[in-house]
Length: 212
Image 1: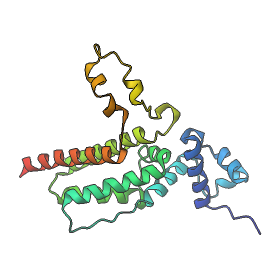
Image 2: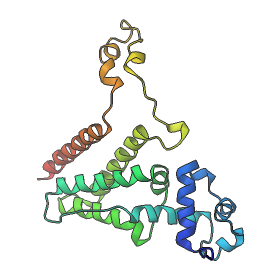
Image 3: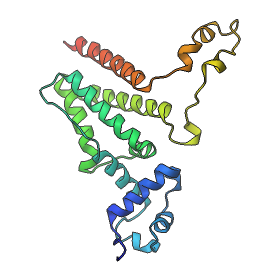
Image 4: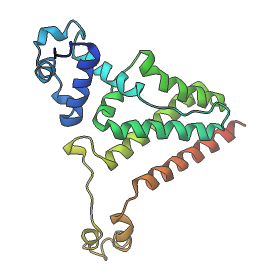
């Protein structure tokens, strides 16, 4: 069987795999060539440089977001659907998600989720600047949740404290921390995300009401 021919999708897939294993800092054209068992110069026939490769990684990840969006649904439900879809892809590609939020994408694949989110907010009655700020707030929340839940690098890996460890704190110095040891030592990530998502949506609804 002849080896699979070198192609842009194959190069991007190798980069995604490497990023998820070792982080974006591990990516170089030479390293990707080594992963694929090809000469480094052959990569440049498909991807001009590392920056373009990272853009392609971000665009590929974003293109896999599955939106089960209902244009006739309330804007609050559409926001929930879109936030959950982005969270789902972030869980599948946690380290690549950090690449996604660090790139300024111009392609259709990169802009489609942004367009959907902004269109939802604009149809709900928000002004342009406000819609952009709300979108950025949601992205910050989802990425922050991702850092807490799965970690994206050893530096940012979540620290899980058991109830016993938290219970060792001095109750005189830290009475609230001590009394809430059970709550601090447990975390249902799904429930935590949904709780925060509802808080954001309610706050945004209040903001919308002020314009009404």
